[in-house]
Length: 216
Image 1: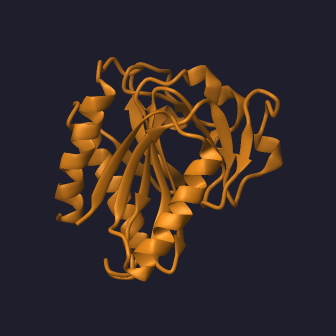
Image 2 (image 1 turned 90 degrees about the vertical axis):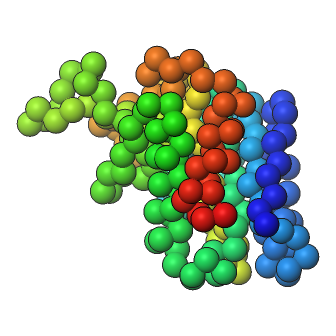
């Protein structure tokens, strides 16, 4: 069985990393169940293992935390649901690519519960939404904004770190970085798209769609 924990208030980022590492080790040892941990952080930037210093455009704005997860720079803050995913990928087939695809599908299924159509784009990490209300791009392509970020790490086939979904964060806070190294597209949220969704409603949708995607 997968345990679900929701932590109110803001969780310190370094404390969260330490707790994830301890839990991942316990899962690998067979002494603790898998875990989905739902929380929020106070405003901060994290630098994944592929982060480029030039993408940190405002280094003095918020605390910057180097992170062992994959990916580049991202923002965490109030109004964003962070989902730390500690699952046994070995038990689930030893297929990292498929696991990431499942995480993407989980986000897309969750967004669909609120009438939002999420997309995966080749060469762009995360989940994206089309913006017909914004000016079109080159060759008349629809504008697209990022609504969810994904960045994981594996140790002994146990995942940690995970997903962030923008419910109603301060979108201007993303301007201190080049999110995930992508300059041609913006960032959005459920509220920015006109959806009045509570954090509790988002959490319920996450739990329901988890069962659909992961079959448990």
